[in-house]
Length: 117
View 1 (cartoon, rainbow, N blue to C red):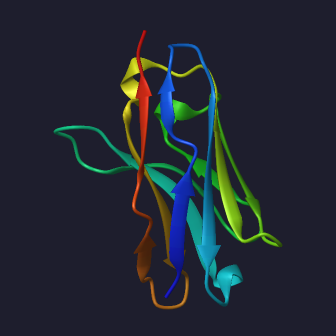
View 2 (cartoon, rainbow, N blue to C red):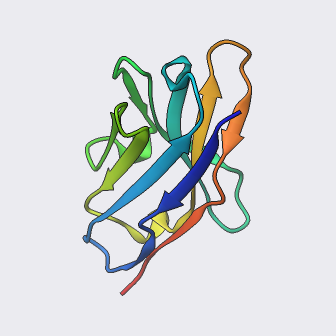
């Protein structure tokens, strides 16, 4: 079991930038894929970006070229750098840890990102 805590959300104007951080507490984090998901009002939760312990990444098409996910294994932290933000990026962003051993998922409490002028 991994405990996750997100920070860094807020209100930003279109075209602006935000960086989300997620601290992971637990053992064996190298056995987890870490990622960011988001859920907008009235919509299902969707994958934004994921990163393996080796640094392999995958992004949703809607954020490719604008968002960058990175992982600091020494600090047990995953980051999401979000640039060129759009109003449609408005959502609650959740940190996720997916075990490659038993496929269990752990979730953070979520952090609100609002993009509006």
